Length: 471
Image (cartoon, rainbow, N blue to C red):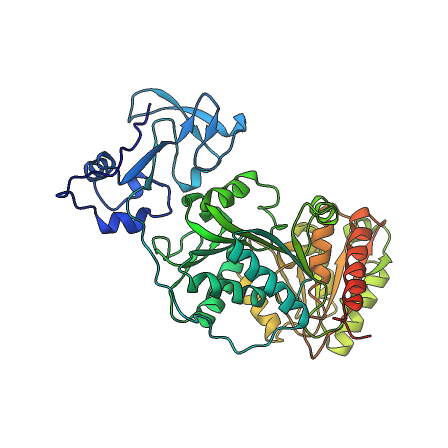
């Protein structure tokens, strides 16, 4: 189906565009059925140049306009009731509503909505560390120059606070800002924090099932999946945890980030664990980047210890654990020190739990599909649980002031360099308890284990060199 180009804006002074449609469509790409007005009214707006249509699927190039996928395995045919033909549709972004060859993606082309320029929008009385101040200046410069920047900050360095000044600068000049992250729970954590420090504007939190989905907001906190609904919307795009699954491996989400930016805009990436390619590109000058190699409390990052635990899976099949793991657990129980223990698989975690419950009946375990996941994490925060077993689901986003960390089976391929650095980063985050034991129990050292420890030690050296860590 050929889509007609939108004409220039109509000179018909009697035509009145629909303000609701303008607000709904500005910076978006939506399906006809997602719009709050009739198809006839949308067509009138198109005829007068106020909306544009784009084909959902390009058969010649075999690509999806909304999510950008070009992998043939994601396309399938179906008999379309609308046009009566057998058409291709995209399965990759099907959860956002089906896009096929005759599907129209609708965007606004009329007068743009402007945001009020808020003088001094930031209300925050906190203090930045020296490392945070340097990074904050660089973020503000990138915002002012519509530039790209990578903020490489250790876990617990306070990346969110580093963004405040740059976002305030953008809001004060009427720019539209998005902070995107791969995970819904991070959106739920960040949205109220930003709302608190920017109280004079509405902060929209977008994730699957969000009530804010149709909000037209100057500051948006969204999962990267939700960016598939946007088109040339944001003057400032900030992507947190770019190394996290699924963003790190999903080209569709990376495409969504690029497509939701305005042609002239800032792009700021945040990560504690850039992959090897990004680290190399930083070293050779391909990336403009800034590091925060130390936490605000000026203590070094805990460096993981490696302990060989033999064939722990074989022992586990006999309902036993290696003695050094049992000894590590008993030491925490004796001292009352809280701990997180990471296991590579849910099945292994459940078997480990059965054994540890014999030592203490208050052990708990948690994984991504656990319906009580939030409650169990809250119990850990409230010190109702001393030791919590977990999969990699808790490698990020959990801060417990005084905690030790162990990984059982750290040689498993699920424990990548990035995952292990993040796991180690759970310990020593508090100024009151700036250290913590991090132990990787293994049945053979891996490159990921070695690289994770090397990266942590490198950041500690850099922190000392820059005078950000007390020695």
